[in-house]
Image 1 (cartoon, rainbow, N blue to C red):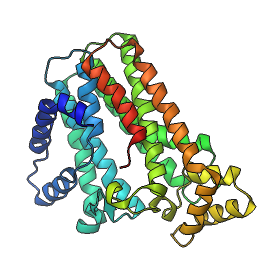
Image 2: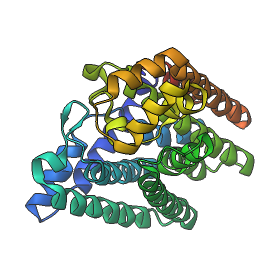
Image 3: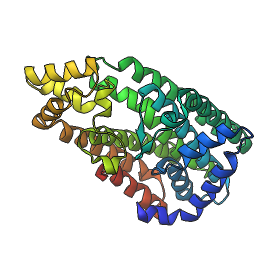
Length: 320
């Protein structure tokens, strides 16, 4: 992480300046909520991905700073809406915006960030950029709805789970990498390679997030263990137990998904560990990371490409 953040440190500083400038609103509550969530930290992987992809294609302008900020605004808007839908009260080790400012303010400021992102992408004045971002935003919204439909449904299979990940999480990774390639003037093959890299990286990233929900340290993940279970989300570790656990283990997980809450968390965790569900999910994440790395074979060698490859390793090795 430190290696590739050092590589793009001047660009990330410029992106932060864009974010601060573009957060301005005459409405005080908009500023308060937006600044609270943006300043909450996080890995900033998605904007970093725009910068690394652009650097790998030898881009020398400044549009990648604006686009990296656009990606961060879209991501932040989804977080605001997610936390309201999920009823979450902790993110990145801090109270969620909805816990402090209320659900209504969080939803409306999320809408502000979406609309501000579209103002910024129009300013770049590139129809292909606008098409990628508008399509991605629409797919992400579909993913949110699909995840909502899947909640408390213990019959969701692995393919259905992966579809939610591709839509809800991986699509923005794909857009971030593809945008860097587009403004870098990449060939069609290199652009497709970057997009493919992004979607597999995002999938690996979310798979590990779902593993950490049952294995991470709360002080590192910044969220409560078992949040997904409490919300009735059928993530891959649970799906694996349903398909490969014994009758008692499968019944326990089914009951937990359908009812939600944390009452069954110790028994569910025991079933996950006994069946090897977390290792299975990690293997799937490693396979996605390998696909991401392979997709960069059409991209010229550079420090930026090396960092993209390192990022695919970090996505599956991380503990936060």
